[in-house]
Amino acid sequence: MKDIIQLLPDSVANQIAAGEVVQRPASVVKELMENAIDAGATKVHVVVSDGGRTLIQVIDNGKGMSETDARLAFERHATSKIRCADDLFALSTMGFRGEALASIVAVSQVELVTRRESDDLGTLITISGSQFEQQEPVSAPVGSNFKVKNLFFNVPARRKFLKSNQTEFSNILTEFERIALINSDVEFSLSHNGSELLSLPASTFRQRIVALFGKKINSQLIEVEVNSTLINVKGFVGTPESARKKGVPQFFFVNGRYMRHPYFAKAVSGAYEDIIPQGEQVPFFLCIDVEPSRIDVNIHPTKTEIKFEDESSLWKIISASVRESLGRFNAVPSLEFDDEAFPDIPAMDINTGGNIPVSAPRVSYTPGYNPFKSNGVSYNNSNTSWEMMYGGVEGEKPLDLSPFEDIPDFGFADSVSDSQPSSDVLFDGFLPDESVPLLQYKGQYILVPVKSGLMWIHQRRAHIRVLFDKYCSQINGASVPSQGLLFPERLDLSVSESVVFDNITEELVALGFDISSLGGGSYAINGVPPGIDGLSPVKLLMELLHGVSEQTREAKGGVVERIALSMAKQVAVVVGQILTNEEMNRLVAELFASSLPVRTPDGDVVLYTMSDTEIAKFFAK
Image (tube, rainbow, N blue to C red; front, side, top):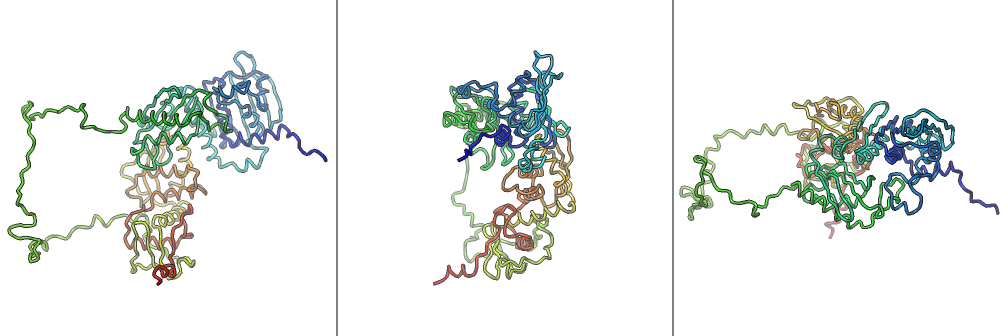
């Protein structure tokens, strides 16, 4: 029988390896920037076009490569950092596997220009899809210049599954932030489609945080620095005032390498227990230094997960270091009035300025006083003339209730749609009738009698469904008028947030927001949509922005749907909010006029009908 097992060609093996290493354009940016840092570069410039699809260029002033090294760098498992297996447990560099460049050239067209300081001429190498094309000497500055063009040009299936240019660039920006943040002594710049978005001079760690995430965060940082025999922890954590639900920057770095570690993140969040509201998070930027022999960074292709020798001990050290910093910087205000540090303060005469004798105040009272008796009349007596208690009331003016007439209607439409309810069996026999009062149960459910039984409607989810349809219609149709603010409010965003925000500005304007750019990631909110009285425009936009940015179940679908859903969740009535009978009728009528009233846009159940048969079973003999 003929043998069937064969060795794969190098080009095919490289493409398979590229599936692990090069997942998207951001993976290429990460690998090339890490190589630049390992080469001792003090300046790194990143140029991207079309979200990395057509061009990714990384220029550094590192030590460069010789003619032979430049050619060997693109071979599989070619590395200058490992000579034996023991070197894996003494790593002090970022890249070490020797798979990055080989994987990149397998799925793209690469051009490299590099020169060492000791060489008169540099080297130009061109490779396309792992096929070597040319190599020649050229005039070049010291360092390396990588150009990666047309990523996945020879793997159409992979290219087809890339996201939009904006999404891919957001991922690139995330990788750029991680590397630029920890290497604050290196100058970085980032350009996209010919426009420079970031220019970061060499600075301290704190200055780099402020440069990436805005000036506002500078006043919200608490320094952390603890040295122990196991690890050293340095960096910053946020004050309790910096806590919010979404979009909080949280970074762990181990020996200069970014790391995801939910277990250690809980150590930080646990230090804020009972200090911040439940469900909110604080920013942190913590650098952990540990002996390389105590960790294993070779457990994940992207090297963002690290295994530690004694995680429980490190957890305790991290938690204790954060708690110590919070106490040292008085982030948790407290006054111990029984402490000896608070001596008795002498009283002072405000007229003479001298000390006066102090005596405890005395309280006088009448032991026989009865508050239910007045002028000999006892009001707890059944024979009491009650008119005496309310004498003169009939001459008073009626209570002015006009301030309560302008209470907003929570965004419900002023008029109910004329469209008929769905013919679905769930709505059989129900017609909105304001003459029949509805029942609100515990501020969460609306009970509606229908022909087949009793319908339970979740009021918040129903309102989300109604508002979602309304906002989608507004964004896709004509813009709604904006309600101007008496005093415009300022919105400050980081670079990554600004990229997403600029991409959704058109949809926000259609919703009724009036926003103008002030430059440098700052925006002026001049107007807001009608019907959001009582909500902070800045907080509303921040929550909306982070809801759109997160790739979660809530954010599936197009950008219009994501914005409409996020906006609806911010504006909808909350659980426990009391509604009038008129408001309940409007909500129920608009819900039944919706295209899909049974579920919210993200799949939550809106209503449930308890049939007459189910009800009768409870009372059956």
